[in-house]
Length: 610
Ligand code: AMP
Image: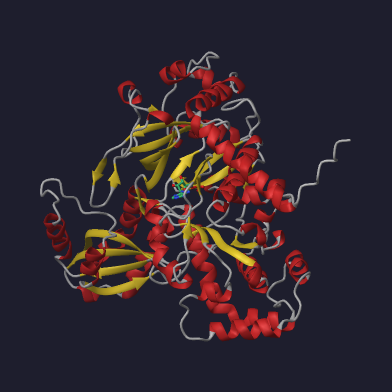
């Protein structure tokens, strides 16, 4: 008689699931090109009747050659009329045969408003699949992660409705509110210290407070900590710095502060909150030691790494994270966007400067446009312009990118984007099997970023012009300007260095410069204003007036670094420490924006229509 099969233990199940995920990664990276071919054909077959494909003459073809020949390579501006039709209630298959389920609001902007990315129900499954690969990869390098909890600070943001009633919200808000997250099955890898209710609470103070309370309460169980972006994690630590005594009081007495009024949050937290004076004493002792160096490892002694994105502009937060954590490994696990999720880091313990993401070939059809950097000092990349037929031919497929080269990412998604320029610049440092890996280099044109805001040169120029008009009444004018994202204090803020030509500087009252700061803020895009008003992740904008001749010195400096006199243009953003020192050494006065700019959830045009 054969033996009855033995029931698998929890450990066996974890190992089996990990192996399945790793095998999937192996298969799709070995067969990257075939998978990409299949993905494109699947997308085009499913949406064969979509108006956009017919309009461009694809005529039901699903092969790469015809697709590349007839389909234009586009940016958001090209799609805007179609997106607006969908937002206004046209339910015909415009971009995609499947119904658009909602819009994901990107942190990229168009005309000062967040871009609206169409999405379909299926995409949630694709995103979940990518998430499900992260911990199996991580577990190859760090054992025991299934034996404890993750303390992740996760947040939702407000949502709006299009005139036709489609929800528009950020991709993570959409994910956390979906059943994929809320009703996730019991899994040691998605066992978080924050109850769902604390994550889903829209009030950022209550959400942060309750997540920290739960995280501290379970401090011994925590084996990894994190947030999405480094800026969010730093914000949590600084919140703790401000509110630890209230949190300690709650832990001591097993109560929840009266400022936490959301009944669902109160109920979820009170389920496991018992008076714990010993823990409260411990936390209080650590928080009053004077220095906050290493506070993360002190309060959460079993944490093995910090899971946050520190690539791209987020690298500015690495020193602060190292300080607070006594240099725990910083782990960047994935790379994605509202358009679609792209890839994962297969060497998660590498140093932040070496992080590369392997694009998962099942997520979308990927193409790459070779780029060259216009200005090595500022790192700027040339503007997006429509591609002519010759330029279109330069796009290469995933498996054809060359080692060491830089490319702009172009995607074709299941949700109706075809040959869409994402705006990210990537470099190829190596391959996993046949699938290339990519360093994230920068977002095209972005000059300033503190949190998820991305301000480009044109937006900054317009905002500065609007503000500088106010100097005219004092017979003064702006000679030159540049900018800097100052993250030395929290929250970080934008700094503008202004050189002014004026007959008598004493005639300009400080309130005029403060008004200028405010006007710049009012003129910046809605993601910036949301950061100022709702998320409080960006501090008041500052104008530092510099002595006359400062920008000549800046040019001299650039020339010593190899810039050419004929081609020199004032950089509109500075990052290099010696340049910032030079600018700061010439500051004669500085002013801050006195109040928050206006911001409302939803697009400006919808607000005025309602
Ligand atoms: P959003 O559409 O608002 O979700 O923003 C997506 C953008 O955020 C991407 O196109 C990138 O520019 C940036 N981003 C996302 N993940 C990463 C990452 N791991 N490293 C650097 N930048 C990232």
